[in-house]
Length: 142
Image 1 (cartoon, rainbow, N blue to C red):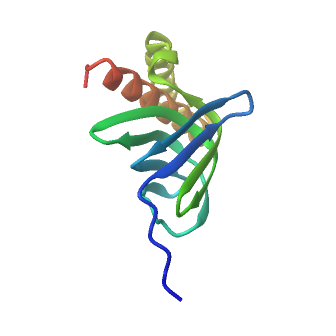
Image 2: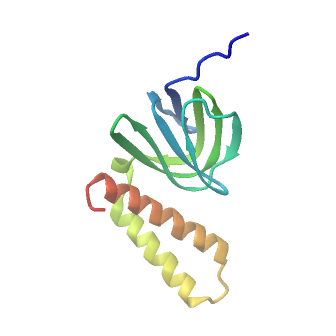
Image 3: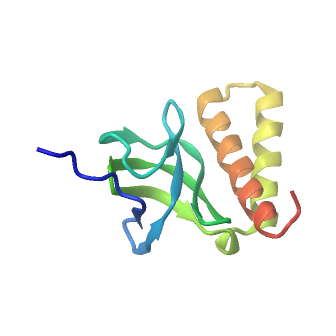
């Protein structure tokens, strides 16, 4: 029996508890897994992974789109990627001034080291840095 051909596109679906954010045919997806970034192309082997804090991006042709992502999980199939994110933001939804203030606040608290939850502050610092990166890259600042 001949092997079926590999898919040439990926159906990317991004959902949050509040909404369906995206449902589109794409060429490539990069997800922030809990253990590092994963690049997904059509025909990828099936997997289920937890999402970490990072930049979730996808490519269609020569165009690339990015989102700020914190937590959730991803189901990868050869022709489909389903992202169920706890929090995900498009660049235009990010309040850059607020993200910068959160980053500075976390850095100050980490520098003080007086009875701080380092893991919690590092997560806050990472979330803020990712939000800044996504917002600034969308506006051509990076």
